Image (cartoon, rainbow, N blue to C red; front, side):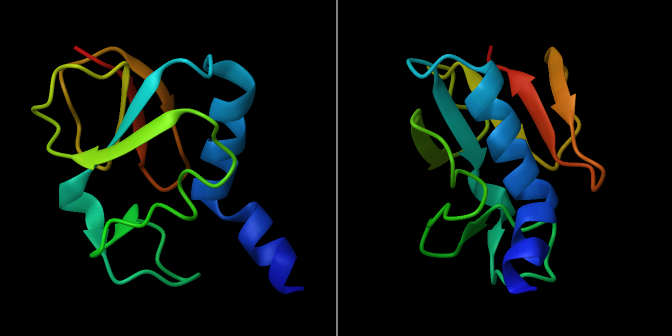
Length: 101
């Protein structure tokens, strides 16, 4: 039961989608403003306050950094903010994957 809850979690689904669709050599940034206290009921927290990205980046082999979305040397950005960047994917709970600047 517990594994089904986690598997169906929007962030895990996003992680699986990225694994299948984004080359491994691309750098992915997770918005540090979206860090907080995480549990299976929280669907908008992308990383812990200590910057662990266990769920959002669970299936990724990419380099993943947690930083400000102003960082420009990344290929993709995961955030809950609407940005003026090319939208690649949006989850059911409004987490956005953008092509980097």
